[in-house]
Structure formats: structure tokens, C-alpha cells
Length: 445
Ligand code: SAH
Ligand code: SF4
Ligand code: F3S
Image 1 (spheres, rainbow, N blue to C red):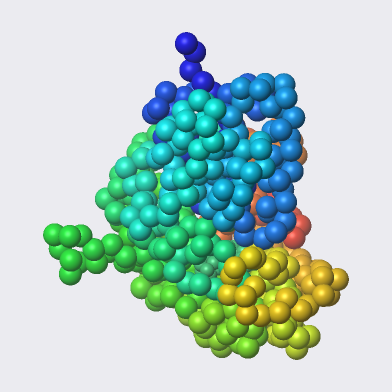
Image 2 (cartoon, rainbow, N blue to C red):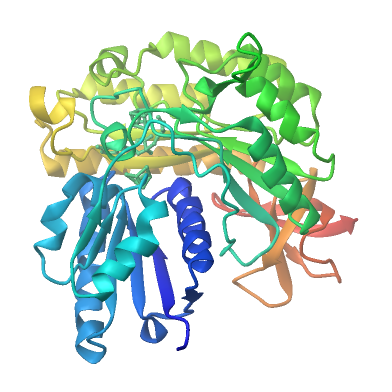
């Protein structure tokens, strides 16, 4: 009999992208092949996100498409994985079309669940674990560029920000053994990868104590150093840093190793201390700004990106203005901006009123986006005339005659091909920019 083929679709954050690679590895080991399109699949897995309501809406839309595909191929099995699987559990099976439900800590069980579903029995495993980190599994890279890869260093989250579903969908925080992380990074480097991004919801609380040497704790600064030491030819990035936990030790390590990219993703969420308290972020506006000042003192020229939520419960115009003024003060290089979306069973949903009207949330968000666009254009304009080291990641979407890559500060640069190879470093002089992209000309390798 021919191998059954799985097709995986991924929504949500970088961690989900990496999890899908773990799922591919587990399924391949169990004898499944990978289908390159839905029409060729015997099993379709959709790895889902619950962070905002629209993220879930998108998945419901996809499930409709799978329902139609099932009419064409009645043997097709549909599996819902990830955060929505964990949040909705059996409810998903009641929708008829779903055969398999697996939460983020249950992926090792997928071959069994799939076999059970193949026998016509709906299958579910949404147990969360206190230990699972998939440490021993080598993810099957599906990114295809062969240059940049995500490496999960921890799972779950303990922070309980009042608006957030992640602690419920991903469970408690746990760190992955450093030796397995370094080994995975080494293997990637040997296979030609030139950039890794270390992933965790709060990388600064990474901690690993060996049973044999419990006093010698590997913290995030040390882990970063271990990964940077794999090769000076390997770029190292990481996300996400939590403003309450980001230590100077991490900053000094970044300053010490030129291959650790000068970029920190430091989500602020709001510029108002009152709102930050309601969000349970555990820092004030002033403390956030002090972290930013410290970053700029220790790593001059370090790019800072952020996440912002508009219209959280009880947010006044004054609070909103505080967010805008903080944005001006920091001048973020990049920002991910969202309207507050109430998530069932979070503390905010249970205790606070979602009282900013939807039109007003949208208005505030648009104001935040417009300000960010002017600020990021300004930040990009400062790049014009500079020569930056760019890791070539692929051919530009705009033209086959152009390549694209990123600067250490995570800014995307498009530049003429000039016989450069994907996966190499080139020096590019920035000659023009928009608020989203830099345009460069090739200098030398
Ligand atoms: N661990 C990261 C964030 C993970 S979620 C951190 O603590 O910063 C990514 C972003 O989604 C968050 O930073 C936040 O800005 C946004 N987000 C999370 N829950 C949200 C909600 N209920 N409504 C709108 N945006 C939300
Ligand atoms: Fe969610 Fe807060 Fe954890 Fe980030 S730190 S994943 S926002 S609970
Ligand atoms: Fe979404 Fe889960 Fe990531 S809710 S943002 S996929 S951790």
C-alpha cells in the first residue's frame, strides 16, 4: 500500500510554524508522506490560533473548504491542532467535519489518533503536559528557503496577562534542555542554515537546571551565548522578550557577540500604566521606557519592535494618547498592532467590561497604525546611505532580477541580483526606502 499523505496548514505565531514542523517529523517517522496540496492529501491538519476572534474565524472558513474537499474525497481525514483545538476541545468534533483534535502537547499521539480516525472513530487528545518540549524531535523544515529556521527553546506561559488565551491553550511554562537546542542549531548550520530564531513566549524566563548540577542554572543569557558560539557565520535572533524580565545580562551578551542580531521584540501593549496594571503586565510606562534606554545604552543602534493593543477594557482617550506618546518617545522600528478582542474565560472576559465600542477601537487602532507608519518611515530614512550586512534569503516577490534579505536590525532589503547566492552575506548600500522596505544596491560579499 502506498504511504498516506498529510497536508499541513498553519495559522498563528512562529511557534505554531515550528510546531507544524514537529508534527511533520512525527508523522513522517510513523510512515506518512507529505502532500504539497490539499487535493493530494489523505489527511489534512490545520494548526490553529486562538489569540483573537478573527484568527478563529479564519479557521472556521478553512474548515468549510475542507468540508467541500471531503465531498470529493470522502476518505479525507480532517484534524484540528494547536490552540483552538485546546480551547474548544470536543466542541470541534461536534461540527461533524472534524475527525481529529490534538492540543499543542499531544502531537506525539497524532499517529495513533490518525489511525483511530481512519477506522471511523473520532479521536481527541487535549492533555496539557508539564514536561513536553519535543526536545528530541528534529523538526522537518517546511520553510523551503533553507536559510532561516525557528528553534523552540521553551513552551507555554505562566504570565497570565488578563487578555490572553495562551496560558490556557499552551499550558504552563517549561524550558527545553540546552544540549538539545545547541545540537539542533549545529545540525541546521551544517545543513546550510545561516540564521536561527529562538522562540518562547517569554524567553527571558528560560531556565534549565541539570539534575546532576542543580546549582548551575542555564539562564537565557547563557543559552544565547551557547547558540552564538555554534558559529560566527550563524545569525541568532530571538523572540519574545517580556519587558518585566529582560535582563541586562542578555543585553551584554548581545553586545559581546556580533552574530546576535541587534533587534529586540519588546511588546509594550499600552503606554498607560493604569491599563498595563489591568493587563497584569507587571511593569509601568516608566519602567518600559527605562528598559528601552538601557537597550540603547548597551547596544547603540539596536532595533526595537513591539506589539500594541488598542481599546482594552476601560481604555480612555487619555490612555490611548499615552500609547501614542510612548510610540513617539521610543520610535519603534516595527510594530504589530491589534484591536482588543475579548477571549472567553480569560480574566478580562470574566472581570472587566469590553466597553470600548468597536468603531472606537478601530478608530484608535487606525490612529496607532498611521503614527507607526510615519515613525517607521522616519526610522527607515535614517538607513539611507548606510551600508548594511544582509543575509540573502531569497528572490524578491517583485522581480526575479532582485533578491531580498534582512539587516541585523530585521529590516527587509531588496536589491539587484548581481550573482549573489541565497544563504550568503552581502554588504548592501541602502539607497531608497518606503515605510516597509529598504531598497539597496550591492556593494561586496
Ligand atoms: N508572549 C508575547 C505575545 C504573544 S501573543 C508577549 O507577551 O508579548 C502576540 C500578541 O498578540 C500580544 O503581544 C498582544 O499584543 C496580542 N494579543 C494577545 N491577546 C490579545 C487579545 N485578546 N486581543 C488583541 N490582541 C491580543
Ligand atoms: Fe500571553 Fe502575556 Fe504570556 Fe505573552 S506573556 S503569551 S501576552 S500571557
Ligand atoms: Fe496563536 Fe497559540 Fe501562537 S493562540 S499566537 S498560535 S501560541
